[in-house]
Amino acid sequence: MARTRLTLPEIFTSTPAASRTGGRGLIGLEAYESLRTAILNCSFTPGMALSEVAVAEELGVSRAPVRDAFRRLVGDGLLEVTPQRGTFVTRLSRARIEDAIFVREVIECRAAELAAQAPLAERQKLNDVLARQIAASDQKNFIGHLLADEDLHYQILVLAGHPHAWNPLLLARTGMNRIRHIAIPELGGNRIAIDQHRSVIQAILEGDSARAAEQMLLHIRSPLRFVDAIEQRYPEYFVEE
Image (tube, rainbow, N blue to C red; front, top):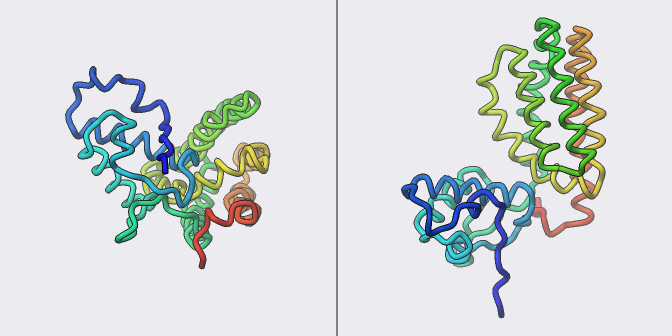
């Protein structure tokens, strides 16, 4: 059976293999970023088998940096190794998604409360990020939409005075990114997110801490309804629990 050729995002492959001068660490980082992006945007679908050989051939590198990238992705929970079978893109798990939502609730609802008490001039900058997200969505630039989404949530942490909370939060958000990528084109998740962001921002601008936390909670929990719809359409993407 012919092997399906892998297609990776233009992160690593923009530099011709013959002209790369970086060491193994740099090449491994580039390979990791390219593979991570392909998994998070569902170019590599949940449950898909990945081969070090095939990825190395596609990237034009040796297997060593690809092996390093695979190890990191296993640590991120995006790849899993099954003995005697191979390496696979981790399937979606409702339990893990609910865990990610739990972590986000604890951090981000409190951040929204605190952000509502930041100086007004700083709070108003959230509108600029929202405008960028709306523009990306209107242009069907869904990668740009999601990057603006991440920036908005980061800026709320900054307003709350806890920018370093982003690192533990990012891991939880990573677990949600694949749901977002599927939900945007198929379920209109981008429009729903923008409406919810407007509500969160409005409460923060009005200095209403309680309502800011309440709106953030509704926003964070909303992907659960996408999970149901996605699982009905693509049951093979999910683990049996």
